[in-house]
Image 1 (spheres, rainbow, N blue to C red):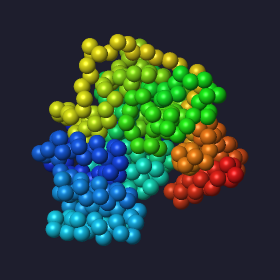
Image 2: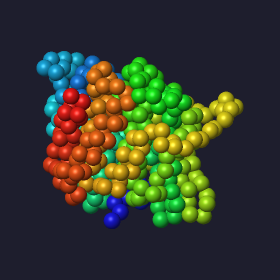
Image 3: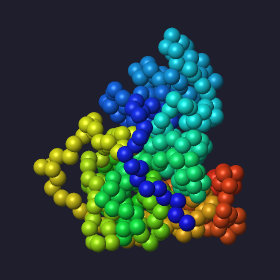
Length: 401
């Protein structure tokens, strides 16, 4: 059974498009606010939500005048500070994880930008799907952990899911040249991260600073480490499966160090359609919000005179994380929740100096194998998925100790 959706036809929604940005103070969120400020008339920010960064959230709110702001995991003083700062602005201040769910379902929100990092972003995506919203999805975990719940729910309630990841946006844009049934394979490109040319032994002992030094993209620390292990690409393989309804054998990964081709589709007739651009997240963010229209953007332009070459390499088994992505597609069920949570925990432990770089993927592999031999559920509920997530985090600590 395929849960993918057709790219939406020209929308009947009337402007203005009213937008809630969940995770507004992170890297994607800040870029989204910038895009919405650039778009101006016809696009209105209804809500902004962050985890704890009340200062950045208040600055965004004072600039964009939303109706509501929320802190999902505030410190004791953060909400008080936020209320004081916005006291004279007629902006409602909400708190707690449920505030994100409420924001995702508001009647005065057309588009929900889901940019909360990690499993915390899952619940508001499910609520937005139930409410039939237009979901601009940057939260990988929603589909990696719960694609089996999110996609059927979106279909049932007429919600549209538009990818913000540059790779999936590239596939989504290229699909306007053909039907899903006409795809021979999709090719997700990967920069190869900072360790593309390093020998495996040296990579295994890389420092946090080295892993955070991404050659092309400027992203948050968790995603940057995922790009160094190529775990981000493993998660994107799983996302692509859900977004476009493709099995593992029709999804491939190609290393493209220049990050100019963001991904491509090879159709059955041999044509290859690719989407190209600078490594600037604002292009994909804007397209997810304005689709199917294209309007003047604020991202940096590609200067062809400066491009000396575009090169490609096979991953050739150098990045064991990739196989985890394909394994999750083949297994389904709770396997995505387990791999995602194990990687999140291992990534966090590496950044805290508790494990080596090489242990991130190795530990995630061990956790998945343990789960498949005992505890795997093929048709999970949300409760099962959240339990698998927690089990995986504890198991990482067990294995490390």
